[in-house]
Length: 98
Image (cartoon, rainbow, N blue to C red; front, side, top):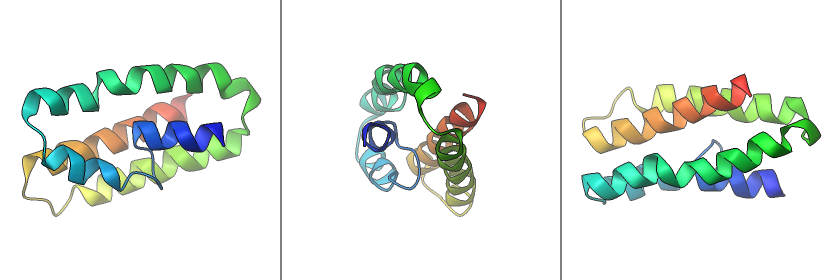
């Protein structure tokens, strides 16, 4: 349950659907904060909980995020949505490395 809540907060797939639409409607400074600083605390909690979490769950979350982020950004014409999908993909890679 805690991992699902943290995954929603940092925008990992499959609970990433809010991130591209919200980021599209924000100005660049607020979008920068949403894409970077807001994700530090939840990611730190995931790092602390990682030894107690099933590694298959983290791997699946990371792979799903990397795939969704890569494929989602392919046909986008709006820069902020491309950045949102890039953020999803990068968080996926960070979780895979974790």
